[in-house]
View 1 (cartoon, one colour):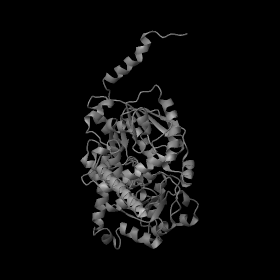
View 2 (tube, helix red, strand yellow):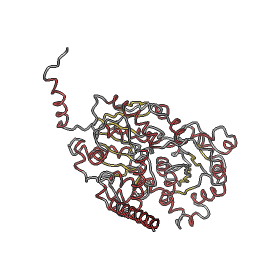
View 3 (cartoon, helix red, strand yellow):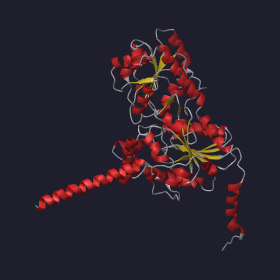
Length: 502
């Protein structure tokens, strides 16, 4: 039988200790990933972050589902390695979700596929840091990595979720919403578990320890001038060590309009069109918005349509443009663009606001309804119902373009004042710089000269509600209500028993 020399038994421990005390260089080994299924925009955002980190000199490993290769292509950034993992495909997930399976159950199945494959790929590799989609830190916790969380989605309950998972609140904490969120989360967990659960997990780190001792910060897309949700602004301001705005992760200020745009601009200049509008409803299948397109034609705009369902529609093509390029960020830079009509996704809204034009927000599902509401609250656009008829859409478009009734609908703001607000919001997003802001945030930690495993000690401690509920008044209020409910039920039962006895 082969025998190892005695030194071989303690060499791994010595190597690990040396690594822990070795001076920190300016470059890190960083693991980056987003949610893996039905999350195209999340994956695009984290791809942009990974590219920026690699361009800054870090060694970056990006985990993506196999399907992302067709959507995003292969990166060409030196220092960026992409590992493709095989998990449930988007179509299967969507079909099963529509059939009634829960988000949590489907996510747990994806986790059971992901974790063993990811562990096999990272075996023998050392990572200093994980930069991950805040919705999906399951692998970072599995590997016990110091983590930066990145916002890739919004939600009507995002502020309560921030309190529940990170223990971070603003100056005007809504305790009622927090208690409702906690109660619903616990009920969901009792019946179906969490979307982070997995039978394939071998983690020795509890979720409480992970959030309190490994999560460094949550990087929030947006700026103090425009954020989703709107209530994030005072919360970020209250916790500068743990929260930071980073602008838009998918907008590209230097993007060049597609080659088709030159011919389009020439065509528009020689016609009676009043300019261009971009119509884009994301990557999920949505019906062709015929009433909205009719309304755009009515107000004199030619639409650049990035909605797949409109392809081949001769009536639509007679008045509008169905380009071959699907690069939304690039089309937004087209000269003559006067209006963006988007579906209300987090990334689409930031991209649209970032070019300084008014936004018509047409929600279709999930967080898009709340996002459109918050866009309107911040006076940067207007919500249009997806089933709105053409006359209603015409009125909204004319208001956004500064026509009749616009000032009254916009709370008294003049066309010039609204144009200034659009320009200011766009300038703030450009200054925030998106992925470059993530790089700068990490560099500030590196400049301290300490290793990533020690960075959390420099930050204010986190007290997530789920980890330390007794530290929060909401817990004691819920406990008191529960005790009162139990006493009420017991009292009712006693009254019923006494009545039967008599």
